Image (cartoon, rainbow, N blue to C red; front, side):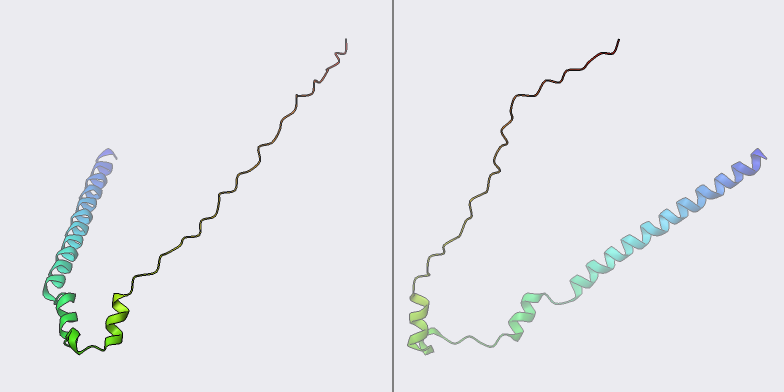
Length: 103
């Protein structure tokens, strides 16, 4: 009976190692595929550059647009609430309790 247990343990160990190697290979293959996919597609900067129309020179802009850019930004005010603090309870002297002994 002991031989049967050793054979079962050996085959179990074999299947655990096989499962580990299979998962290891799948994870690394997926990682390499992701790296290759990112390398093959064009970068987002290139896509944006192709989609954007050519910019107009500043001389052709209206005078109103230039004035808007020269304005100073308005100051930003932040509202901050004061943290509320709990009132500490006032403790009085403890009351003395007398215990009567029955004897």
